[in-house]
Structures are given as C-alpha cells and as structure tokens.
Length: 249
Image (tube, rainbow, N blue to C red):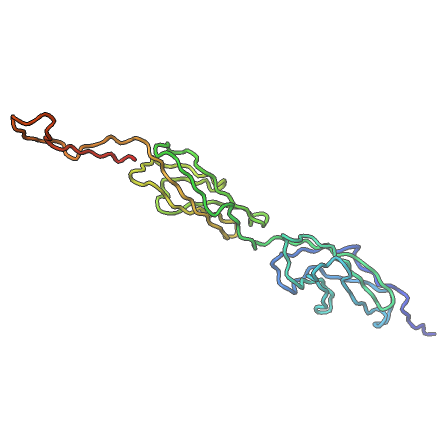
C-alpha cells in the first residue's frame, strides 16, 4: 500500500522571532537575517515555501531574497538611523495552502553620515587690551546628529595671531593666552573648527576686538627744543612749537 502525500502540514519557522542589525550606510543586498522553516510534508511540491514581508517595512527599505538556496531578509533601500533606528518586520511563510508568521527585529546602527553643525556662523567679542592671560572670552559650540564616537566633537582654533589665545578641545571655551596690546594688534579674525570622530567638520568665524585703555604716556617728537627771541619781543610772542603724540585712542 502506498500512501500519497497531501499538503496537510503548515510550514513552521525554526525560531519564534529573528534579530538582525545593519549599519545605515550598508548598501542594498546586505543580509539582515536568514530565515528557515520546517514542513512535515514529504513531497517537494508540498514543502515548497515562499516568504513575504507583510508589515513593518515603511518605504520598502527591506526585502526578501533567495540567495544560494536560502531565504534572507536583505537591505533594499537607503537607511537613515536618524529617522528610524529600529524595525519590526512581519514575515509570512506560505506553502500554498497554509500560512505561518514570524517577526524580524532589525536594529539600524549609526554611521558617520552627518557633518557637525556649528551653533553660530560668526562669533564676535570685544574686551579691554589689559585683560590678563587665562581669562575666558567666549565659548563656541556645535552639534552632531550621529551617535557614539561619530558624535564626539573636538574644537580647534587657527588663524593669524592664534598663539594669543587658547581653546579647550573638549568644551570649546576660548581664553586669552598672552598679554594683549591694542597698539600692536587691534583685532583678530580667527577660525574655530568643530570636528567629529569621523573627521567631518564645520567652521565658524571668530572676530576679536581689543578695546583701548590708557596704558601709554604721551611722548614729545623731540627730546630737546631750542628757541631764540629778541629782547624787545612782545608778550605772548611765539617762541617755538612743541609737539607730542599718544598711541592710545
């Protein structure tokens, strides 16, 4: 007696649910998870199972593909962790008569795909030229939409005269680093740079103006003046002209 097989067994997933993780920068075709089912039927026709994503896939960024005899959930479209970092895909398996379901939890990991954004394009500050060294004058800042080391920002300062200032690499605090002299340098145009852990950066202009203080005595143009006068010169007659200058404002 030969008993012919009929399709009376539903396919069953080997796991209750599946988990996978991909980077947001992974290209289409990147494997998220491998799916597998068992079917109690014996003939190939009754054991033939097809898989479909039936929910949890906004934008169609994932798909199911048959690769070397295995059904896999793969990346299909551009991922963006900053918009959505977690998916629960509803997976349906069917042998043509019976249907079974499972879920695939997908975590989207960060990639350094966001450039830091400086809080301001231009910073301006003015202070007296006699301000002592190591005094805070301003703080620059930036933000980064990435996570982890990709979002860790380091600050730096460069430009002509940068040696007169100090910038904290971690906080963006800017301080004086030297004794200033407005009569030598009255203003500075510097660049503050914010760089993330992946080398992406933004830049801001830093404009520094030194305010004058009365720190210079006036000086005569000549160290000695001579004048001759007639003995019959009238009172208040001009003898000579004295001239002096002061570098302060």
